[in-house]
Image (cartoon, rainbow, N blue to C red; front, side, top):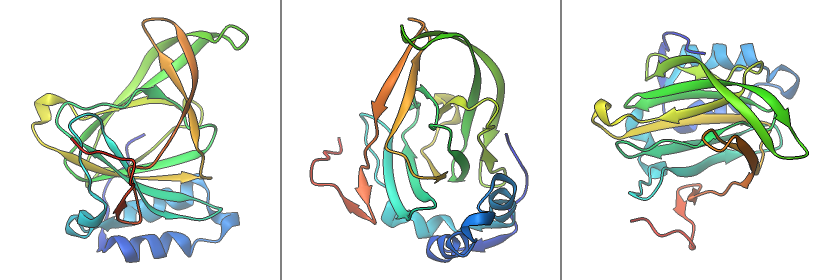
Length: 198
C-alpha cells in the first residue's frame, strides 16, 4: 500500500544503520513504515548496489542480519517481477530512482496438493521516491513492474523481515503456483562470480 512523503535524506549507509537500530521487538509493519516515510535515501549513494541486466531485474544485497535483509532491485525499462509472495514475511519498498507500478492479487481456490489456484487482480498503485510502500500482509501476492511507458530505469529498495531464500511464484495463465529459490546478483557491492550481466 502506498504511503506518502519521506522527509530527511540519508546516505544508504546511515539509512540502514537507522533501520538496524530499531529493536527486534519493535521491527513491525507500522514502525518500519514510519521510519521509511520520514527518512529517504539519497539516490547517488546507491551506485555501489546498482547492477543492471538486460536479461532480468537484479537483486543486490546491502545488509542482512537475523531480523531483516535490505537490498536494491534494479529494473531496466519494461522489466517486471513474476507474481509472487514473501513467505509470510513483512516487506517495505521505496523507489529512490524512477517509479514502479505494484499490482496486488487475491488468491482463490487454492489447492496445495495440486499446486493450483486462481489469482484475481485487486489494488494497484505507483511507487516513487516520495511514495514508499509496504506489502499488505492480508493480501501479500503481488507483482512489481517498471512499465515501458515510464521510460527510464528504476532502482527500488526492499526490506524483508525476516530474511527468506525462496518464494511462491504464481502463473496466472496456467492457474498454478510453486516454490522458486532466490539468489543475489551482488552482495555488499560485489558482483557474485556466477552472475553475468548482459
